[in-house]
Length: 423
Image (cartoon, rainbow, N blue to C red; front, side, top):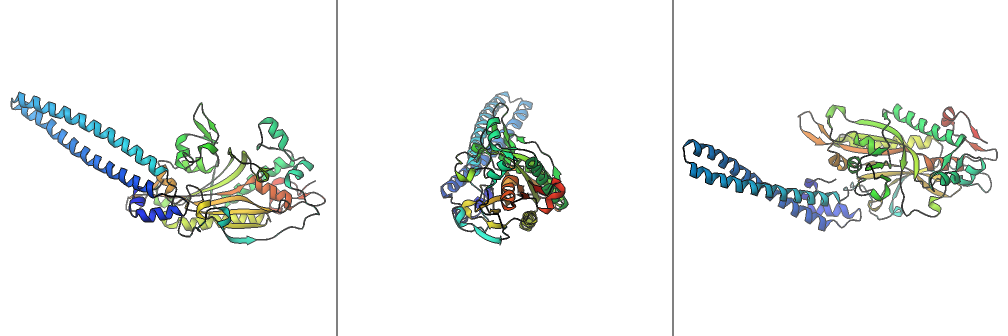
């Protein structure tokens, strides 16, 4: 979440920044400043009342020692009245603080200066395009038909077992999934990311820490009996490893990677965009996360983008990199780059990765800080990226590598699959 200082330093600039994300934040900003003024005034009054209370309490002992019992009794009544007043002030202060927190949490992160203006995906900026298209057989098949032809993904069986959006991978389809996960993890660890295997259910505090709650609770699967949430991405548990942690400046950057199944309700999704592997309720994804120094977090972001690009390029797929406009960015992001691969049978671009810098937005929620050489603590910056999300990678690999003989496996994956063709 934003800090009070970010909002109060220049309220007009804060409103202007949030307008780039399509938010009319001026009324909320005015409410926040008014609540903060009220909180400060209550704190001053409470401090004064407690000081007066402590002074009167000391005077009682002195008066009793001097045998001035009547005056001491009067002082006791004064102390009782001050205690009642301070209790009320504390209750009022908590109420105002809760209201203030709720207002601040409702505001999204500031977008970085280079974020393009715009409201929808059509306004995103293509920063790189690699058009290494394949020569396909006449009338190439979409991946859902290929999956059925070679019996490697069973969508109907997934519906039987669970419902739509929960496919069953079979034979070489399952092996391809496992190969991609291992390949991505190996590439990430070779680049200096420490592998972790986190839980796939998290508590409410973890959901709040990375910004999924209260913003996206409708998109998360919720185990109500225990109040746990199934993770929509490994970003949530991995970043929360550092909740309420103070790192030493020398430890930065911290780089971690994890594979998890991911769960998203995707309420309201329908039509051709959700067919086959295009949009699922359960899918596999490998994630990279960094905790970085504020002075170098955008350098870290560039490094993460370059790393993800190497992964996509190594698979031989046509791809493009987009800088998202303000209106198409997530609630928590300050700057996001999306990677899309081209599906040559569907004739459309499919998103396979988002790489984002959240600056201090998540860190403020997480209370994730670092201690500098002068012993002062400051909020760190957090970043994350998909490296990569499997479903649409698989869709593009199947479609773009289909031949008359079968589906060709990219060279980098053969050591992991143990086969070079799906026939």
